[in-house]
Image (cartoon, rainbow, N blue to C red; front, side, top):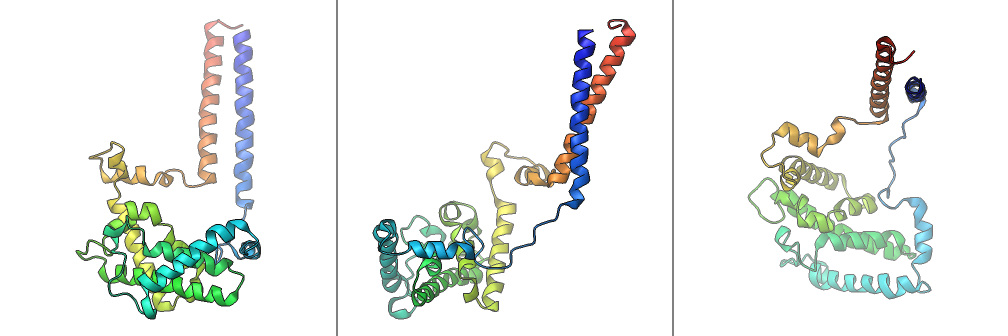
Length: 269
C-alpha cells in the first residue's frame, strides 16, 4: 500500500506540473514581443542614462577627476601626435592591425573611449569634438578593413581580427563606437560597416576554432554547427515549455504503467 500511495503522489505531482506547463503554453500567444529599439545609444548606455552620467563627469567627482579626466587628456595628446598630427592621418599609423594587437595604441580602443566621452561630457562642444575624434579613428579602421578584406593581407584584412586576441581584448569597441556616435556616419559609411561586420560574422561561423580547442577536432560540420549554435535545437520559451511538458507526460505514463503492473502482479491489493 505504501508503494501505491507513493506512486499516486508522484502521479499527482506530475499531473500538476503538466497542468501548469499547459497553462503557460496557453498564455504564450497572449505574450507580446518587445519592439526593436531604434534609437541610439542603445548598447550598454541609453539616452536615459546620459543626464546621470553627465552629472558625474565633473571635477567634483574624485573618480572622474583623478582617472577618467586624466586618461582623456592623455588620449587627446595621443590622437594629436600619433593618429592625426596636424589634423591629418599619420602616414605611419601607430597601429598595424592584427599584428599590432598587443600594442598599447589600438585604434578602436581610442575610438571607443572618445565615443564614450562624446556621450558623458557636460560640455556640448567637447562632446562634438570627441565624437569627431571617435569617428575619424573608427572609420580609419573600417576603411582599412573594408579595402583589404578577402585579400591576402595579414593585418587589417585578416579575418582573424574577429576571432583571436584582437577581438578578445578590444572586440567590443567596434559595435559600441558605432552605436555611441551613430549619427556621425553617412549612408556610405554604414554600407562599409555592415559589410565588415558580415565579413567578420562569416569568419566566426566558418573559421572559429572553439570546438577544436575543446577536444572536438575532426567533428563534422553538422556537429560543429550544433556545438557552436545550440539555440538551433531549443530557440525560445515556447520550445522549452513543450519540451518540459513532453518529459513530464512521459514520466507520468511511466509511473501509471508501473502502478498498473504492480496491481496486476498482486504485489499491491
